[in-house]
Length: 222
Image 1: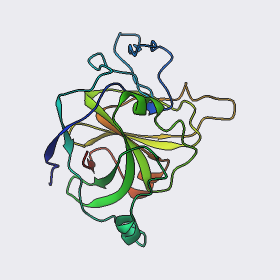
Image 2: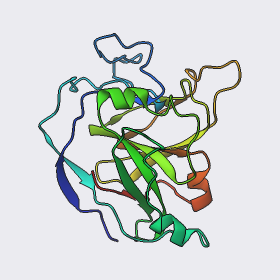
Image 3: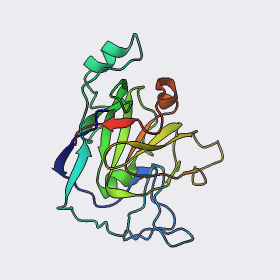
Image 4: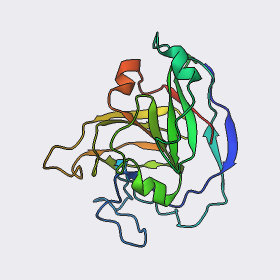
């Protein structure tokens, strides 16, 4: 089984953000909300609350990330176009982008997406809540400085998404399929818990179409 090797980087991990906004339990200064047992919580689909050790300043702690793979999707006719296409910067203006490849534990390619990197407090706070829609093979990668429990919510989301949690080595620990909120809903009640250091948000159904499951691996570079 090919495992992702580690690559040391310096990341600006100041706070946590989701595709929507901070949980209503968070204070204006970034103090994380807590659940009933006092643990910190993070919102889904674009917003996450900061963990206790995160601060609004740049972190100098080296961070290891899964390495990006260079394999090819096994989806059939779209494989070549998926691999050769250059990411469109207009999809996520102002964001750095990375290619995220999804593989089985044995290294078989399941697909790839071009992901906007949400690695600062503000970017994680905004998440996908300001996005009306995404092209098929695009997503957003939320980057945190450690592995923790990070429930996400569908606050102010305009479309359904798949929410993929992965640990510090990129191994997928949880996959959720979150529908968009109803006409009279704001998405705050749609909570999707998981544990990980990375959270990849994709168009709803992307993981199902490609057979992505817990134990598969995200490969990328930051």
